[in-house]
Length: 156
Ligand code: HEC
Image (cartoon, rainbow, N blue to C red; front, side, top):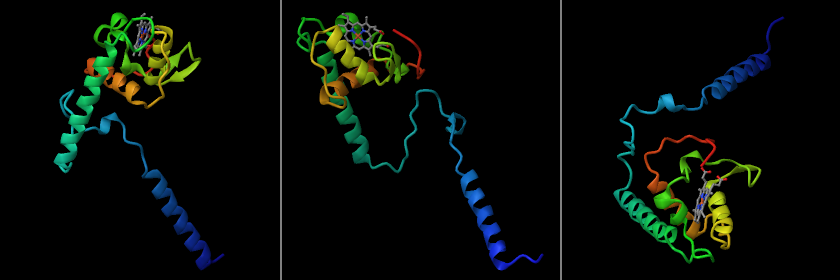
C-alpha cells in the first residue's frame, strides 16, 4: 500500500513529538559545574544592584531572626529558642522538609518551628511565610550554614 501524504505527515509529527519529549531530561547533580564545595556559582550577568539588595535584605532577616531567637518574650513562659537550641543547634534545617510524628506528615521547617513556639514557648503560632517565621528560619539556616543537605534524616 502506498503511504498517503497524511500518513507520512502523521509519522513525521510522531517523530518530532518523541524528540521533543525525550530531550526534556532533568538535570542532576552530575550536571553541576565542577566548583569547590561551598562556592556559590552566580551568573556574571546578574544585576549588581540585585546582588547588593539580596545580601542586604537577607542579612537584615538574619539579624532580626537572631533577635527573635534569643527573645524570651516570643512565647509566654519566659523561654527562648536559644535556651534549648543555642545558636541554632539541634534544629537541623538541612533535613527539612521531612516527616515529623507530631504532624503525621512531611512538614516544612517553618511548620515545625511553629510547633516549638506552641509546645516549648507556649506562644501563638505564626503564619507560614510571616516576617517572624521567615526571620527565624533565616537565622537558623545561617547558624547551620555549611551543613550538608540531607533531606529526611530523623532528628534532632
Ligand atoms: C524547651 C526546649 C525548646 C525550646 C525553647 C525550643 N525547642 Fe525546638 N525542639 C525542642 C525539642 C525537644 C525538639 C525535638 C522534637 C522532635 O524532633 O520531635 C525540638 C526540635 C526542633 C526542630 C526540629 C529539629 C529536627 O531535626 O527535627 C526545630 C526546627 C526547632 N526545634 C526549632 C525551634 C525554634 C525556632 C524555637 C523557638 C521558637 C524552638 N525550637 C524552641 C526543644 C525546644
